[in-house]
Image (cartoon, rainbow, N blue to C red; front, side, top):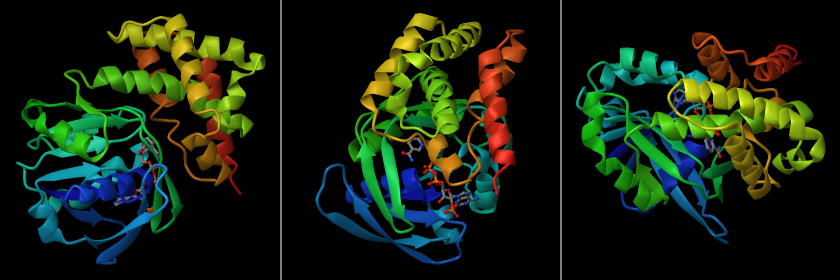
Length: 299
Ligand SMILES: NC(=O)c1ccc[n+]([C@@H]2O[C@H](COP(=O)([O-])OP(=O)(O)OC[C@H]3O[C@@H](n4cnc5c(N)ncnc54)[C@H](OP(=O)(O)O)[C@@H]3O)[C@@H](O)[C@H]2O)c1
């Protein structure tokens, strides 16, 4: 397939290399104006790297693409879509893949006629430098439609699955998005505030705070139609903390490097939904405030 990836950061480069290895023709849409980009791609536990040179920023390649995969951060999605819109055919399916939630309505307004799909992934990638990416963890990717036209594109889950398994189609993509958001609400702000690895949160000192966070998230998820319990979310969070104990979360890294975080698309989205359902989320609100304070005081 002819695939354009918009945003060649860590996760975009990971998918670009993995899809290129399957023989797909990859074109990158980047903020830099270069017309080519050479990527060193290292698979999980692989000793050697593959080298790919991708064509970039060619409007005609965008127009002729069979699918567009958008892999920017949540707060970059709208600008990224605006930048491709003039060359996008309305028949071309667009997949938006980011952590957090809350961009969907505006994306659908920007792309009223395109098939629009969302993906949420637990694959992990590290951008070693601007031209090198390493696959650092395997996890499920879920793909699903958010409009009627998108429902015709279940086959794209197979394309992604062949490149980086496992990827499955989900009839209600909001369900895995909420599950990922719940874990992110617990782990990301705490690791960013304490500047620690995920595993640090397994200490008994954090039990009460994690329980409070999960209780609030469970209430909002249940009100939104994704019934769960505080106990289930605490258990899932502890499982992820243990499985990723040595890792730094993306929000920890963003704060450490004084970059904008995705707090508004994660905890901010939860708070917004809680407000809609008239639920109180004081523990999550306190975390949101602390991350905003950190961001506002970057040097
Ligand atoms: N990294 C992971 O392991 C991982 C795992 C699961 C989910 N995710 C999620 O995946 C999303 C992307 O994360 P990431 O870690 O890949 O972030 P990232 O490394 O910052 O990559 C984002 C890329 O998008 C580019 N970009 C931003 N605006 C653009 C625009 N208008 N046009 C073209 N390119 C644009 C950025 O360009 P510049 O280089 O110019 O800044 C950057 O290269 C996030 O929601 C993240 O939470 C990441």
